[in-house]
Image 1 (cartoon, rainbow, N blue to C red):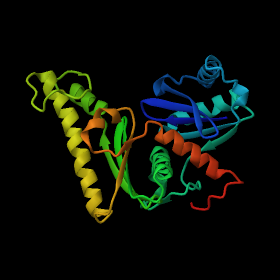
Image 2 (tube, rainbow, N blue to C red):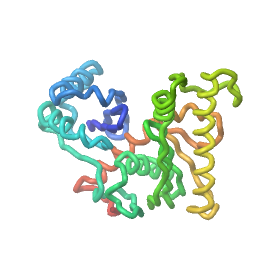
Image 3 (cartoon, helix red, strand yellow):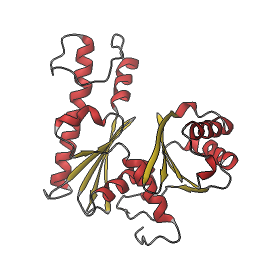
Length: 265
């Protein structure tokens, strides 16, 4: 089995694959990683509670945008999964995605994994991959293989926290779809601004990509991330795939193996 970890600024999203089947999916707060022992014991306990013997985990694949967590997590693996093969998705790894970035080393591993997952789900297609997490990212992938670049926006929760921390009278609110565009209380105004402001920004960027990057050719818009479901009925996404990054990480790991037939870098 393969244990995949997508380490984000707010949450670690993990999954255990048996071949291509996702057997277990879980979330863990990134700030609660603690020591290598604490995180390693958490993983062992999690597997046991889900009736997966930890010895069945033969490999571990990691995509991280939190460099400060990598040392602790790697040591947790070495201590608690000493026989497992270890893989980290980073620049230079063969993935099937060609990074057309000014500095490929700057591309986040989560963006690469999401692009790999989307390209596998929609082979050969022009893609916009949207990930709504701590940050909201929109990346353009041409012909299912060329990562052209993207946009990074403050995520919905980050935007809300910024208002709360930098104003005297604005409060924390539930992040949800408001009933109307027009708020008639401070709380409703914040909710409407967050939701529809984000919606408008995504629509504008997607429209710009279609004209600027894809020359108005057909484009498939794929979304993932914790807040993607908020916009399910808004018609801007062709597909929402909650496990997109985990699937992309699984594919990247498989492509990295010596017996893989994948040749693209």
